[in-house]
Amino acid sequence: MTDLTRVVGEIDENPPPTREETDENPSADGELSPDGKPSSDGKPSPARDETASPSGRRRGPSRMGVGVPLALAAIGVAVAVALSVGSATPEPRRHAPTGRDLLLATATAVDSRTDTTTGRYWHVVKTGRYALPAGSSVGKDPIEVRVRDEIWIAGRGGGRSVAYRQCLGTRPLTPAERTAHLDRPSQAWPADSAAAPICTAGSGPAVRNADLTAATDYRLADVAVSPTWLDHLSTEPAVLRRQVEAKLATAHQGGLGVYGHVVLPQLTTDLPLRPEVRAAVLRMMAGLPGVRAEGTVRDALGRTGEGVAIGGLGLTTTELRWIVDPRGGGVLGVQEVATGRGRHPAGAVVAEKAYASAAWTNDAPGG
Image (cartoon, rainbow, N blue to C red):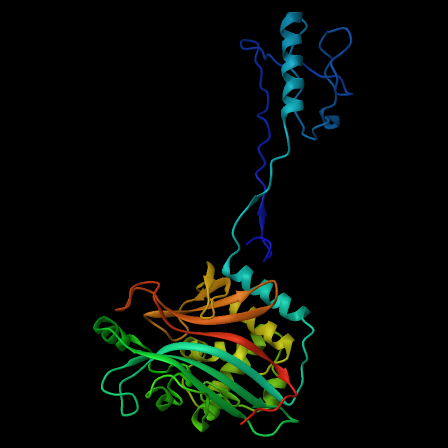
């Protein structure tokens, strides 16, 4: 893990204790001559200026008197030499990176990437797993679905945005899961409930869907944004947060503390942002309260990355966990994880999405 992030090393300094001698309890240590060797005549060296000590430490004058037996002085010299030879600089003690460390390292990697920053379409391919609530399109009971979404957001030189959803499978929720599903936030990820009828018949081929297109086409939560607005977002995290919350305020009451669980996944991958703005989003997240590292985590596609959880963001019984690649500068996926304060067991992944790709392209959507 330490090769992926900026790890702060801690060095323990354990200097040997100062030798304090008294006439009643004389020291057994001998003195070294200024060149670091015992004196040639075997007698203790006279006191000298301790600022010139090879160790760089300032010590008080030796209290060893000429009346100390030579044998004792010789033993002291031997001990001092042995200690000098045997001592070594302690190895730095490393600690695991914090969640803030991981987000900042990922931001730095994003800044250094040389990906294409323009194209006809911002093309996102992701796999998701989440529960759909009971209703006319699902049935009397909620179900869990696995889907693959392919989203084409038109750039300035593109045509019209379009989105496709493929249902990979469904299953009914267990009685315990149906009860726990009541803990889900009222404002879920916009793409969760979009195109719900596609999965009512089970797995099948990808289908073009207008509802999914509308939910993902330049949307911040469910507030419409423009390519120009995205291009002019600040690279300064504090300013960026004010811009995002001002945009949310045009339609909602509350900022990231209410809608962060919807908005931040959109800003980290779903929406087309300049790399330096994407890096600023990660730095903004690193400054939020409740950020912590979760260790190695596997995403919905089976890949492993570094987990970073952020509490709050409008969630109460769950929290969001990003799976990041601090070396490559990417977000592999986002998971909604139970905190244990609701009816889900702590650590249970309630919903998740993993990004297979997210990049500008000049290709055109098919079909």
